[in-house]
Length: 191
Image (cartoon, rainbow, N blue to C red; front, side, top):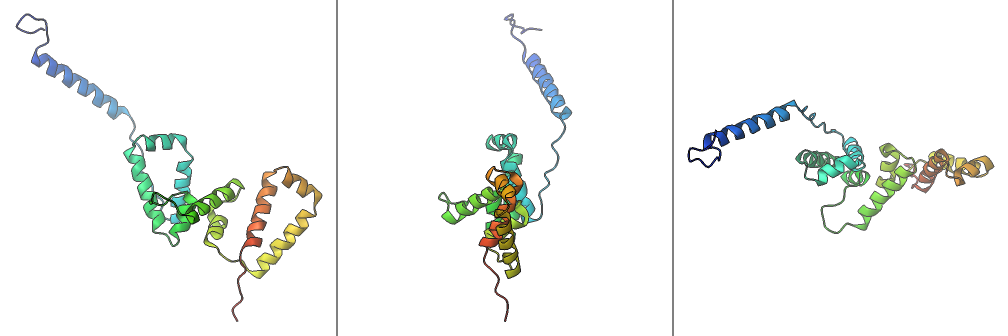
């Protein structure tokens, strides 16, 4: 139906009806999409750090986050809040690769983040060893001695050295773990 003035333009009623139909169609499409699952935020700082590190490696998530996703921004804030409540938030934040809020980062934070990344690339898991290294935890004299003996034995094993120098992942991981133990401070026995 056209306007009463003979111009052929739609009437106000026709325009309202068309807009109403378009809104109903859009609502129908929106309702047919499955709702995003509720965010599950870990309660342990180490788990939150691991989740944040996982998200940082997901290009789709990052693209949506930097694209302004409110859901992803909330997840980031919630994960950081859990990390900050931990017993050693500086270590947990470094493991997750979270920078300080300051515009200039401290060399300590950047070193910790780089160390965590290097150890991960060497096949070391976040739980335990990386945390131990970043926190500066000591090892027992027995652990230190055993690691030193094992490293000496492996470095005299030509087959192991060949695998290690060729870049074998397991040999590299094993040597990294031994070097972590050997380079750690040794606990002093209580008198």
